Image (cartoon, rainbow, N blue to C red; front, side, top):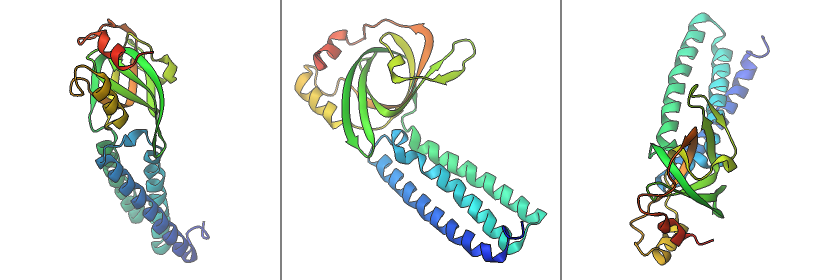
Length: 229
């Protein structure tokens, strides 16, 4: 224990703290920039970087402080309080950029199309689905798909293939304007690009055992026109 909290180790912890903070700062700046540019940040690999860097910073910071000022009750209480406050602030920050468009409930999946459309930055549109109000939704390789039991309300992670036409789902949206879809709508849709909306899905929760009509309010023909098999 003496070696772990020795004054010699304090400088080591200090440098590790600086490196962690620099990495955290870079990750946050990149995420904020991508979010402001309407990228689906919550589905991107970089979205997982801030959390471990944040906790690494707290750990190395705590070790550095305890090495400089020794381990005592007031120091520990101050560190615990600061850690709790920083964690709350960090979680609040994460939520702001994770799901900017919120969640829509009780939508019915109509049909889907495989796309394999690489957007860059580790984001691939695996497929796109048409929901009951005629909206088009991009599903990414990083989109989380869950199945929720009606009775227990417990959710379990499932594969994307579990998503089938007719299911009632909750979709937590992620912001991204799909240029490929815009061109497709502009060229193919007789209704014009303003009628059908396309967004990205950060999470999709299938409401197990609940099904709805496949026909949409705008008519199934709209989806068929856009994507002829």
